[in-house]
Amino acid sequence: MRKFIIPLLAVLLIAGGAYAIFGPNGPGAQSAPSPVPTGEPVVPPLSVEGRVVPAQEAWLRFERSGIVTAILVDEGDTVTAGQALIQLDDRLQRAAVQQAEANLARAQARYALLLAGASAEARAAAEAALQVAVAQATQVALAVVPADEQAIAAQLAEAQAARTRLLAGADPDLIAQAQAVRDQAAANLAAQQSALAAAKVNAQLAVEQAANVLRDRQADYSRIYWENEELRQKLGEDELPQARIDAEAAALRAVQNAEVALAQARVAAEQAVQAEKEGLAAAEARLREAEARLAALLSPPDADQLAAIDARIAAAEASLARLRGDPRQAQLAVAQAQVAQAQAQVAQINAVPREEELAIAQAEIAAAEAALAQARLELANMVLRAPFAGVVSRIELHPGELASPATPALLLGDLRTWHIETTDLSEIDAARITPGAEVTITFDALPGVTLPGRVRTIQPYGVERLGEIVYTALVDLQAYDQRLRWNMTAIVTLTDTNR
Image 1 (cartoon, rainbow, N blue to C red):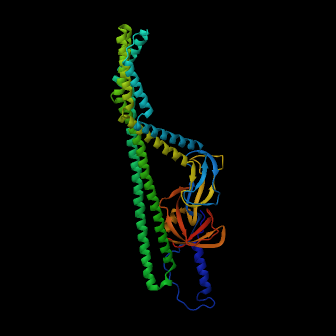
Image 2: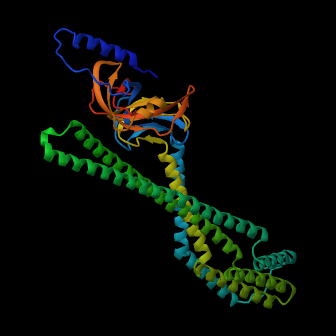
Image 3: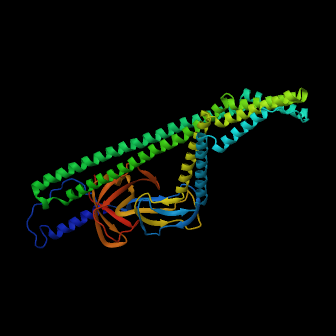
């Protein structure tokens, strides 16, 4: 910390020399009463070192790692909020988006197919098969072709076993797994509801806090404005002190900054609300899918499937009867069984989709939509965009390099307004300074340039540095020089200090 403190003794010596020259015995002196000491100590001015900083600055980083493919701006470029700055290799993310889009289209097509039912061709084929079975049933074959009794018996046993499995329902292990998936999905939904609700409440509280700050700044500005109006009425329009004019301008800027902060808080609150909607929608979709799958496992056997198996059993029994009994009666039984099987096929094709099937298809669509939204978000994260309008001050990446969240990529600053930041005020100096104090500012790089300023804030919390507690102060420039540059060294001299 560089400080230039004029010792009290030097001040007294200079004052004594001046008195010796211009006092009662000095040349050209006139008789005057001796000065009466006030008893107040002389407080020397305070000078501290600071640096020039912009109104807003930020080191931008990527949210995920990737290879840099293009730097879209140069150092010194002025960019707008939302403008693309750096591009990462996004081929995998684009492929993931295409895959997610295809999965969504497939899920939607499956749902549409369930709603539409079987095609006209399939219905016609089933009806034709039924007619053929009915025609064959009207004929009685005189001859019976020898068949393998063992093979038909095996077919009968397999059909009977299939019927037993269908009536018994799903495997208990599969049901337990489906229940576990359903419970996990419910737990995830509850966790999402809690976390997203908390984030939304915090964002809404931030809006209220920003609104309160804005009201305070508006009240300050209104007070200063009307005080100045009263002074203008008393002193005249051109006689208002510059300090009052500066105070009014500073209060107006504070109102504008508070309005920007409130707008940003509202945007954050809207984003929290949207995040809650999307997060809950995805979690609810997964829960619906799990519940639908569990319901399908627990649902009773499908009547059409049972009828088809019964038809297979009847056909096998008829074949055995044909082999073991009267050929004519056996052939007739086979033909009747074929008619029953064809009827069951027609009924199955013409049946409307079950609610469980539709629920599963809808859940698959919701899951595909959530996966597509996630893939698009991952693709958007491959481009670094400017969060606010400003000037690109530094670029830390080059094409072909690996970018990661731990590595800063680009420094962006709003250079339209400059401030002076001091970070080495001792606790003694911090106690002497108050916000609003007028200062003068000089610069090592600009000899002869002195600009006026005013202390905006002093950090309430001090940090330890090299065994000393130091504080940060922010000073607003009341005038500017076009040669000012970011991080230039500045000397802030404060004469209006607390004692």
